[in-house]
Amino acid sequence: MILLIPFFILMEIVLSFYFIDHIGFWLSIAWVLITFFIGFFMLRLSSLAFSNAVQSIDITSVHKIHLVQQKSTAYMFGALMLMIPGLFTDILGVLSILYVFYLQIADKIAPKEDNYKKGEEDVIDVEVIERTHDSDAQQ
Image (cartoon, rainbow, N blue to C red):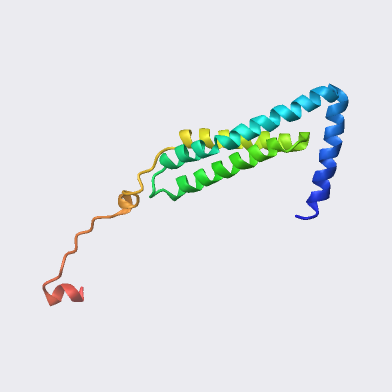
């Protein structure tokens, strides 16, 4: 994990110089400021987004709780990556926000399961017949 830090810094420097070379210095400064404010406002609204997500879950569903945790972590990571100047961090931030959208869409598409009646369809109703004669037991 520590070995990835120099790679990350090198990628950030290379992509930033490439980006500045193609769009110009002032547009790259504007890009950094715009992405910073987008990330800042996303962080400011994160408590609202998290409270809406928590209100929508059912306490008995562990899957939903895990999904809310994944969404909130990816949302916060994406907002923080957008606030850090650099093209590579912006790419990571956008990918993280796209992952949040993917989780939101997958949650809407996934079929709802009733956890209270889960397992009742596997129950087999059996009738037990007792033998009353010894001759039945020997057969």
